[in-house]
Length: 159
Image (cartoon, rainbow, N blue to C red):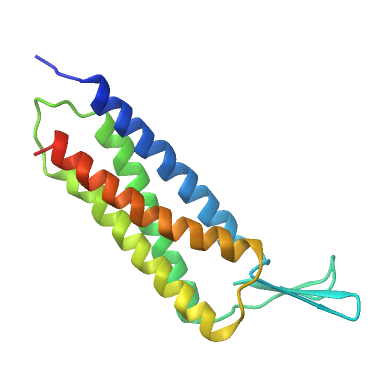
């Protein structure tokens, strides 16, 4: 007999939706160039992880640092794995006990650690005052929170 409970499916769906939002806003924050914004003589200088713009139309492709790029890629990989595995776990039943439930909180905590290390590396190089940096900070905190929620959810339904 296949057993689904409304509470399990609801929490699984909520975790999957929030994970999708965190993943999409993290990708958006990494790809934009508003990590550091400086105003000098009516010219706006914007610095991102991969671009540096001195005017509204002129942007130079410039990597901030290789370690920042690698840590940002690891955080995206961990968030992608956690999002996909949360969608996959939503389809599992309570009759079939598997050990894949630990993958979701583990990858959320891994992405939170990678995002925190990314922020530390970026803070060594530039001052963070743009909206991309704020979104990335919020996403790293939400990654830790969602890891804790998914861990307690795994203890309720998958153990």
